[in-house]
View 1 (cartoon, one colour):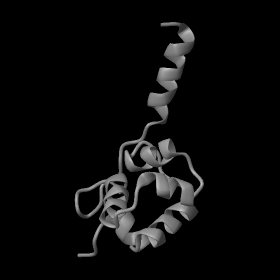
View 2 (tube, rainbow, N blue to C red; view 1 turned 45 degrees about the vertical axis):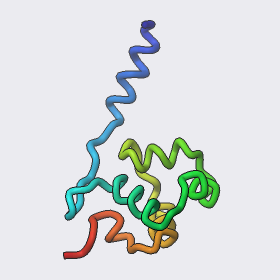
View 3 (cartoon, helix red, strand yellow; view 1 turned 60 degrees about the vertical axis):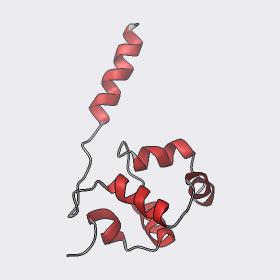
View 4 (cartoon, rainbow, N blue to C red; view 1 turned 60 degrees about the horizontal axis):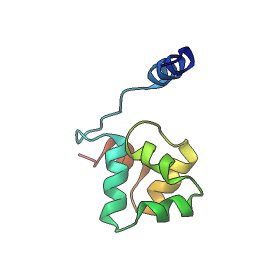
Length: 92
């Protein structure tokens, strides 16, 4: 492994943030994926609809990254849930 590879690995770990857990014990990414799957929508259809790479959607659903707030709100509307429910889970 070269010094450049080691630097890239360190940079990835430095940027990683722990996932956000909501009221239901699920992460934001898990709720995004669950909402998509409950409506029978394929990941490739979502990536085409929002003009993002399928890998980017996978990163969102895997809690590696978060979409920006505008896309997050549009995703919630597309999945038929509120932004609050998608971020924190079902209301108590």
